Image 1 (cartoon, rainbow, N blue to C red):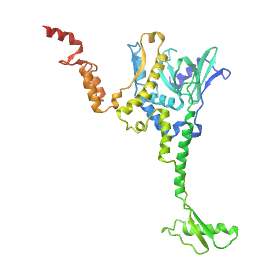
Image 2: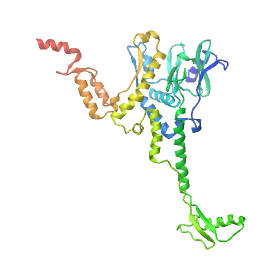
Image 3: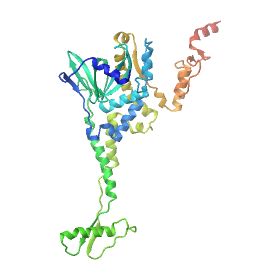
Image 4: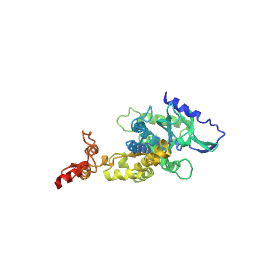
Length: 388
């Protein structure tokens, strides 16, 4: 069965009409920028950088969970169209652009409870309605409308404050977006103006108004045409006070431009070095703790409540998203970490190799501790041998 066919099954859950009370309704924010904040170069760069780093998160199921299929679903292919990396990147792009993102479950053909896929859905065009005390999410995919109980959906929110269901809009960023747009337009117009030559010429004789146009045309063609390769302007004595008019368009200076850019960086909790991939390990760790880690925690908790029942959660099962911050550290820091942790039995050989992006080796999952590099499980045997 195709992906859209599975979504159509959700229509049968409850038939919704506009007569139901709309609890919350989200609408796009920046329509003046042809689609939203994702259409501005600087904000897209910031959003894409956050989404790209989030897409490297590694989903892990805590505990010896009973369904290995669920682990495979999270780590390889959440749906027919996306890998896990693509799924995460799109999901977090939606969240950063719209401050709300929904994860729709895809159910098996044989049961209405077994989840075999996950699909990210934009909040634009969605609405939450209630009927007989039950909340439903109405959403669109390819302009087709579907509905599902809100309790079955994973809902990620950003700037969650005044509304009961959805995160706030990005309206507070509108003044900065306007400044960015005006600056871009100013640079474009400045380039156009710099390519134009303007002169002011006074005729020494009085002529009829209808002759002014022909005189202007004659002076322009004689001196400002493309055949004037020498760049020298020559005119007779019927023209006086011929002067060039300099047009200097206003362009925001570098200091003011940095203020505008920092407004974007502050809003998305990101730095220019992160966007340009030039941050050092301390700068990246600050970025990770400020934005990546909170998003990873939220997604893990959302999926845990979405995919597992209360009994499983009480047993300690749960979805978490891991990220090795050491992959952004210098080789010196990695070496110091591996040396200290390996000698103390904290990490295995394969974990050490993974830090350096190297493939695992056979029997590399054993842990050793400083002494004669004895396997941790054999420490008691070593003690007995020494006593004898």
